[in-house]
Image (tube, rainbow, N blue to C red; front, side):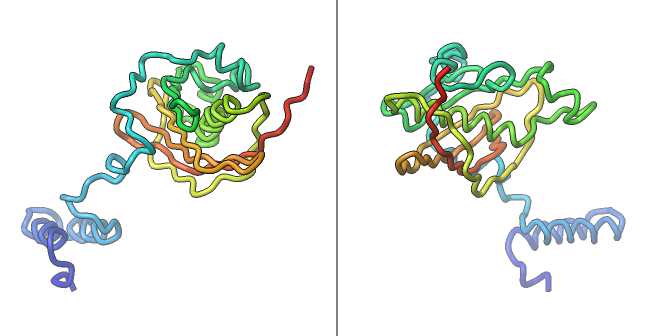
Length: 208
């Protein structure tokens, strides 16, 4: 059976066979390799997936749109305004990159999870939706409120924790009247943390 694998996978298994390790451990390692379908030469998929758009030329440390200016375009306030700033948008407001610096005093830290805080995936998607709404509202004559319609193909590849700087990438892929479609992605350094497509409804903001 092993000879059918061939290539780097077989080489990796044979190297384990010849190493001075316990037989049970050897078997467990083979099972792990077969289950993963990966060999030692296979790149980490979390680090090698393509980003939505090139980010090398973007200075993510330089705010282009601060929280106050974001608040003039979208209705979120207080702890639920999750974006610290927007570092880049393209000329037609179809693409953007925002920054979320995850602090030790975030409202969810104490409970998610005690002793090992991890940013909830729902909040990552919410932050992405806020950037999407900012981009959409910049293209509208009157600002709208964005409501989730659905979330498609969401994948969480890694975690985001206090001390991390989460980069949020957002790209408009379709606009149909008052329905928007955005591909979104979260990066920490060279790691892809999450990716998804979000579909939202643009609703008229209620006047005070």
